[in-house]
Image (cartoon, rainbow, N blue to C red; front, side, top):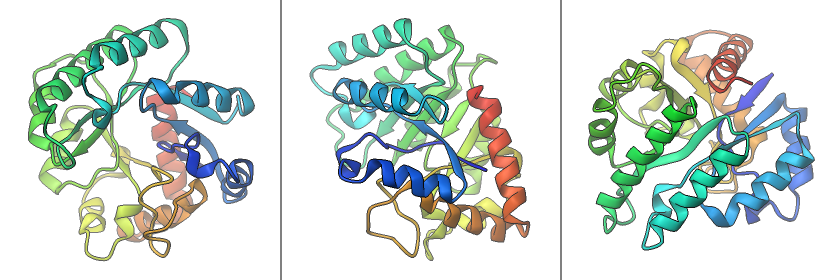
Length: 254
């Protein structure tokens, strides 16, 4: 059994074959899906999917950093209202993304810090989106200094030093399709990280693993990620499955 700890099953890319895609994942041994939030416009679709698959799907709530903009106050109010009125397993995905646009860098950092505060208040882990923003994100996390802080660096693509920094902050590393990319160097980094600190994910429909790179990703493809992690650690896929599933269950309380 595998848990896809980060998959956007509710987005429009799956509108024409969502049920078939979920069935393919289950047939491949991916039995549980953790869905990250993006913004207020996707909340209803998330809740609807949870109602359709109550035993298999678990939800996060948060504001994605690339959706931080002029309506930040309204979006954060929505996150807060959702946290107060619904059940979630994490606050996410939150963080910073300085790859596409740095216009709202300050606001991204402030939104990140605010949502961390709420995660601590509700005793939930955080799921971090980090793109070209390790220094800025570590600046926020290093300032928290609360033993309740815990979570996942989603789609981790950093180096070993950054991995160790994240782990020292009580974070797991979410490993996805990038680990299968020939020149990413991520497999070599993963080989030096204890399986105690790893969970698996797809980030579907994005970042499909080799041999599907550049195409739509889906949760069934997580088997390719598990295979690569097993090779990196020179252990069996069943050991990878067992360890990463236990890590995810413990973190998310599922």
